[in-house]
Length: 323
Image (cartoon, rainbow, N blue to C red; front, top):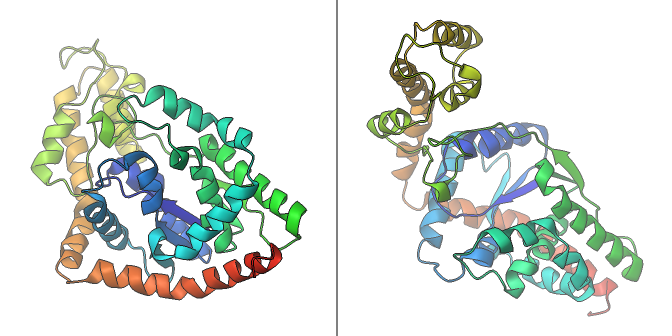
């Protein structure tokens, strides 16, 4: 099982429920490869790389504090394996341009992201780089959301094309479809750093309380005694991830009955988030105090997986008669 994440900023609750908890699950069920996709970060953030190293360090610290164990899973950085770049080159030679141009994500990002120039070879070809990431480790399972299935299918098509030209060797990866939990931000939209609506894993208690106070609730519930509609309230949506079933039932009943005000519910939610993050934050502070921990973790991880990458590349080079 292999998955990678771009180091584009501090991790927030959306990452926790969408990525980190799944990573912990996979770590116990598969031989897992978790990598920092720093080359992928350059496909869209190439113009400003000033935070790349800091973001890498912060993300790996978050992984370790959450419970990712480098002795149980392979943790490494993409750019520490030059073999991936060479494999990407060979795949680029056989991938039809039309496959990349039809990628729905490519089209959507080009239309929606206007603040960056995404008309680059790197952005167009990032699915080919993804294929190199996956196949160089012979990963047979890749976790994806339903919206990411076209990316993985493109990798499978590249593998089949390679097999057609050069023979059977590469593993055709299968999708491990994960249904991502909805994590609303403070404005009701999907939680995202770019929207400015994120609650970060490293936010202190006062910051969390202040952010939750800003959350949008049912606009029809102006006073505490007004009957509320928790089913359309983003505070209630977020609380689904933190409250017990009994607590949720109480919140829903008292909200609808005009007994629970929005301010009070926000206070309850903030305290639940704070309590949930406390063990993670304590562990993270401990890890921050270990000099060179992240660098050592990534270096040792790359050393462990490099023999796999070298062997894969050797066989690919032999099959295409480069050597």
